[in-house]
Amino acid sequence: MRIPTADRIIETRSLTRRFAGKTGLFRATTFVSAVNEVSLEIRRGETFSIVGESGCGKSTLARLLVRLLQPSEGSVLYEGNDISTLSEGDVRRLRKDLQFVFQDPFSSLNPRMTVGALIEEPMRVHTRLSRTERRRKVAELLSKVGLRPAFANRYPHEFSGGQRQRIGIARALASGPKIIVGDEPVSALDVSVQAQVINLLEDLKSEFDLTLILIAHDLAVIRHMSDRVAVMYLGEIVELAPNDALFDKPLHPYTRALMRAIPIASPHGRTMDATLTGDVPSPLAPPSGCRFHPRCPHATDLCSAQKPAATEAGDGRMVACHHWQKIAEIPEVFAQEPPRNQTAAKRFALFRERSQQKEPTTAASK
Image 1 (spheres, rainbow, N blue to C red):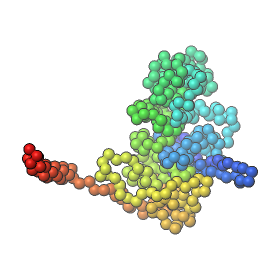
Image 2: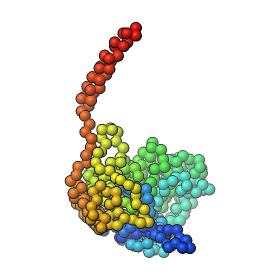
Image 3: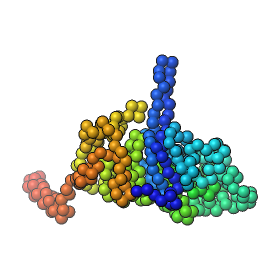
Image 4: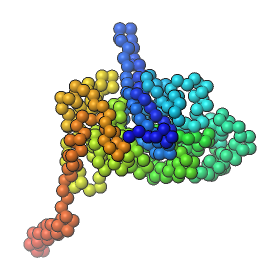
């Protein structure tokens, strides 16, 4: 189901990015397709998340969306305009609307600049505010992200990881963007700090009417924040669906495998369904047909011979799998946990039995 043009803020068409491999005197040039023919649409004002294993191309795709990387093929449309062919000067002006929050809060801030100068820099480039107005804006943004305005005179090394990430978010907001891309924005932080930054992003999205694009490994974070989720495998989108639909009933076998990897508090809730085997194939020589078929428990000869097309699965869902309809009928099989009262009764009976066995030995020893 296509998003209406008026609601669409970013669209990609057959987006591809290849990187040249190492070359030598007697070696031919090799290419790695980090992103391969990705087509998607992002709705204005939504939180759109991209998930997948390390090395699947999530971060490369995120950088392509905001023109931090130039695509090898295909196009990126921002508000209907192709930004993949813009000149450097036009891209510089585009930065006002498209901002990026990097994964590492320790290396993403210039250590030689004060916090105030870091946040003020985008305003000097993209706005006509006076020096007094910029400083007032810096103090306001620091307050918005939960930091004291007096911190503007300090340097990045004086802050913790969570505080640095807040500074990075304030810097991204300084130009008044429409889109913020977060590349693993909380993965380098402690769990307690992660929750604070996640809540901060949600509050700022609502206050500033932002569109958020998130890259993350933590599926709990994704489920908490997202409106829609795209699942990537080896440079391709294999499933795209609304948040609740994806987590309640994943259709692609790779998505199901990701869901089964989520930690469960109860050991009796572990899934007993077929699991993945083998390692992720090399992107230098991706498998023929469906790229997931060497690890898929449902693969057939068709999967290795023919690449599956992206298919509409209803309710705004898309899945790239030859057998998704058959897989959708297979329920996730979980180990049955005995009723709690029955378990407690068995434990109490076992405890009494052991106690009675120990009584004669205790009497004899006396």
